[in-house]
Image (tube, rainbow, N blue to C red; front, side, top):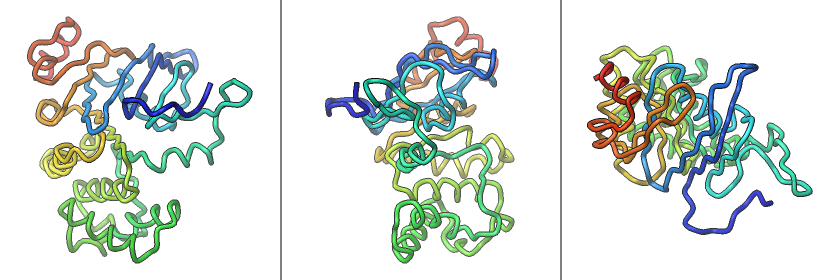
Length: 262
């Protein structure tokens, strides 16, 4: 058994038989999913279906009870010793997360730091990027997310949509090959949703990185998703291209969900 696999045409993310419980409550059941390089996969489903937990498991923010998760050909959260799997220590897990960006429902910006300081902190501390280089890249990212000229603003001086765009820029500052979005618009006022989706839309269309997006925005999933995954009660019910899954779903549970939200 090895933590690394030979370079074949492996997907960026490969999830095999993953189960997850909180005490006696099981939230993920035998999840199998692969995500190819440059692909945008949108995960939809009712609240409590395990979507956010699945994302957190990919980044090893949550331990799994069974199965394996591989990211970029590396086993996530575990190391091999004497032919057996052993859970990584937090310091080891943090090293794996460096190349995986994650944007949460809530922005989690440092309130005492400016937008630019929030963006440059992690590259300097965790990747040893020189401060001048991190600053230059941070300014480029702020322009990319439509916030040029806001580099010296504190979070309290920014709208919710602007704060979420800073959070996206902060994740991009680490130059990840995989971005995980956990319902990034759910905490926003409706009129601010569009500006965040626009940034995500540009990322998806660039094809330069792999995206897994948990979202309630069905229109966004239809527009930018290469595939849509429908989850319910901790299980993957159906997977397919958006035009098929959203317009002609095969499973009755998928049909019922879409009829309620569309």
